[in-house]
Image 1 (tube, chains in turn yellow, green):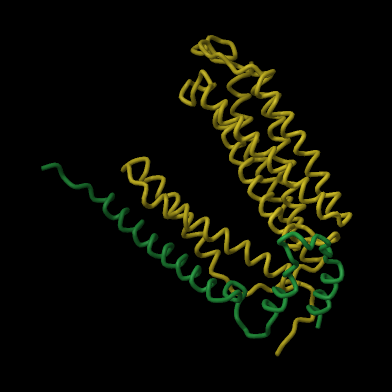
Image 2 (image 1 turned 30 degrees about the vertical axis):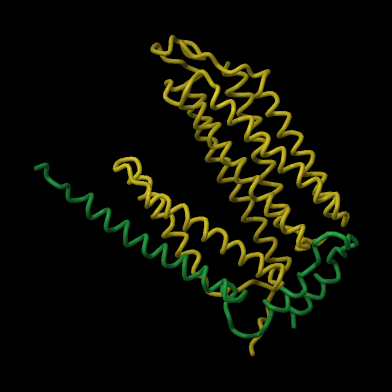
Length: 261
Length: 83
């Protein structure tokens, strides 16, 4: 029986990187089959195997940390760096779409009429649902901070309530945005306005859904007593991600909804 | 030795439940015992029979799916002539 004499985490061999990579192949080839041959089998298979991989991989991380105690201080530091770098990569992902928006809107081409919003586009009123959406996400930033403080103070009831409020606000945002998408007088195929609007806000909406899911996992873990008042990095990572999603919305609101109208 | 020290630290700081009328009991210590058993089983299978079933299902779907993707690629590479 051998034991390590260092504080790092040497993980057990795992099949999930392989299944994850294969699921990525199935998703991409599945998209091709769906676009060109009207067949969704591969795509569904890809989405299913991707979900299975994510569920089992992260389940194992919870086992390694909460149940096996592998997340020492130095391991946690590594995870913090990792999450920060991941969020940074997402910032750069969105930067591309903002670049596209500003490129097109700062110097509108003659075929758009030489002005922005382009000829024929009736943009959404930024003082209506988009403003409500802004307030909803800002409020969710407050509630998640309350949840964190409650967690650090060992207040179980408050941390659960605040997490639930945050998730509800996230779902409310998603519902409002869905309704906006269905009611909008323009579509994704309405020139460069439609493309920049729906791709930027669409990817943002996807990130709201991912963030809400991450927070829901945190809620379940808090219900199951996984977090302690001193050690709850999973929650912190979810909170950082949520704040990032909120900030992206603020940029979207100011640039596309407000300045862009 | 290091691990058992870490576990003791975690238990000491675990939030104690005072809501006995609720459904949620703290089952973390049981889980810690299960997953720290020195049986050489890797973490992705250590939870029990359910783990092995889910693993097999995932493998079959991904490897099978990959074979299907390669088959579709082969079919798409040689278009059938119109009669």
